[in-house]
Image (cartoon, rainbow, N blue to C red; front, top):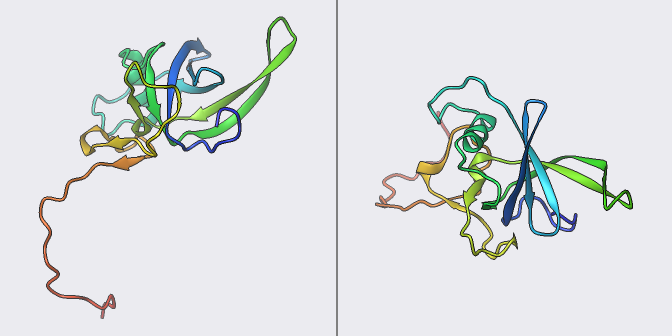
Length: 163
């Protein structure tokens, strides 16, 4: 995804790079060691303390504000959507221009990674989440881990037609 040869919804382990503040937004850099993508989180001045009624932006803002998402941390992430590409950022004293890719990140699609995990594409296809860690407005849910306690027999098989 970072080199435009992969779809953006794949499960990756990325490093949180620089977290900058610009025009009432946190701009967070995510990197696989070679390329970087960025996502924006708008400042939230007032929001409810109930995490189930918060928006995706408010949930991400609370992660940044409480330092649960910080520079130097490795995270599992999937379900990123490319929002826009910006070009014209010069690097190496004007020899080369860098294209910045901005993505949309969902709260439900992020989890912490171990410090020794390899950066880049992950071997597992999805991030497993349990129901307790999910939020209503937290965005895309990659995969839910559910245990079936009891299975009931089918008592009556309906035709699907309501009269």
